[in-house]
Image 1 (cartoon, helix red, strand yellow):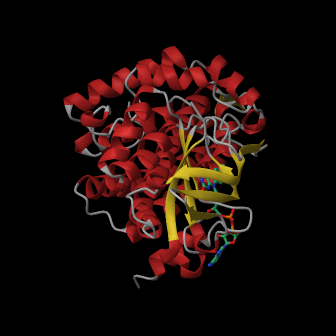
Image 2: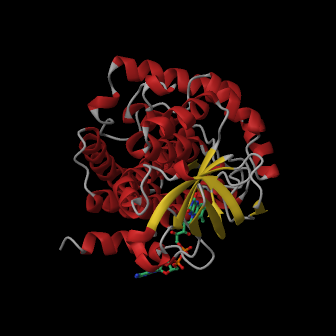
Length: 387
Ligand SMILES: Cc1cc2nc3c(=O)[nH]c(=O)nc-3n(C[C@H](O)[C@H](O)[C@H](O)COP(=O)(O)OP(=O)(O)OC[C@H]3O[C@@H](n4cnc5c(N)ncnc54)[C@H](O)[C@@H]3O)c2cc1C
């Protein structure tokens, strides 16, 4: 029986998408069993082979046009992938970032030559990608970044340091947000592609030790006089970076809401199973009115969230999702995710605090959802601008 009273948006119920969903679920059952994911958490990184396996299964660049080696799907395929990653507990595998955060910058703004240069390799597993915006001194305030890309002969020289970069140890193709004209603020910002294989002056720093999402290789990156060809500026022209970021961030924010929704549904399903079987005072935990009320509230709020996420997905499929609505989804669903996971964990009692229980991991993994992709405070600022 489905956990929520409202199904996902009808766009995801089409036969082709359901078949695709089954194949993605099978892929994770076969390639990401709990024992393998546990090893990635222990190592602090998803093994490189998994990227190749996913690419071979046709899961890389799902919404990239076939003309550039992609799978020729659309955002519905990316939604399915994000949901399955959440529902199957494959935490820390940054494939959605590769597919539906990095690839769109090249698809939407790349020159024809750039699309042909990078997208096929992203689809076949040659490239693993990352996007490096945040710096030790600037996160929310992106205009305050210090990394520069200075014109020099027939190329650019990149200098600066980045931190908290997802896929940081694995990525060999990185979008670096840099100032091509530091005097110009936002208008002097460009997205510079750095191909790291053999790049002199490029260094990976620490793979950071985190509260959760341990399998994700969130890292520091350093650029010391790294030379890139002039045609590595995404779109070809300097100064477009900020506008490109602002246009693409709503999708990133919706992605986070969708991941949050998958976690909410998984948390409720796991908790329902548990409270039906665990006994205290001679009855199932579910038989206590408190448990019923807590879960009734969680189910109600999750259902409301589902309706809103469905609405946002539909809007986005019709290219109508505005930045403020995407920010509402990101902030509200991730706040709810943290609240529901916490309340569910409580119903597990002491077992909920044990690392071997998925609900404990979900509790730790969820926390960052309120922070990355723009903090929930920044989301409220963006919403407030529309008041
Ligand atoms: C696991 C993880 C993965 C990440 N992956 C990436 C990645 O792949 N690429 C990337 O570029 N970055 C990534 N980040 C960075 C992330 O996007 C930033 O951490 C986030 O944007 C916040 O920036 P900050 O850490 O500098 O916090 P700060 O900007 O220093 O904010 C500190 C606090 O102040 C608040 N604050 C800031 N400005 C305001 C304001 N104007 N009004 C009210 N409150 C404000 C914030 O909301 C926050 O609570 C990742 C972070 C984590 C933890």
